Image (tube, rainbow, N blue to C red):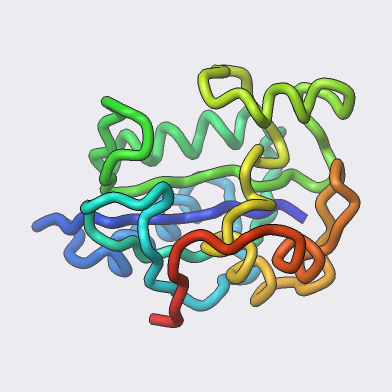
Length: 175
């Protein structure tokens, strides 16, 4: 299963609300050989780490594509840029955030080095599955909307187990 996390906490005159921005991102994905199979519900979520920036709207989608994982990751960054995302500093407010959460059972850089890369916030190496998805309710709860039995290919835990195994950070509520 290929999972993409989506988030937005800014509005724009071009797209409107954060929820509309996520819908526009889904349309952009469909134009790029990335077919959406299923979409979670939309959630309003507190910024993590906590800050005074606006709350996010988050969702997760499952997709099918002929692109390999790294091509898909590059395409997600391209769509973000085309929608007006500017990357100046980590964890800043953003128009759109598209994260490749998982790509089937593939692990990048590899299973032996995944933990080191996932725990290194300054690494520029692609990390798949996403290095912090197992710690974030705003990702795990929408994943459970799509597939409650999805299992993390490195941690070998399903969504429910990951939700139970970490201390919740940030409020997540159905939009």
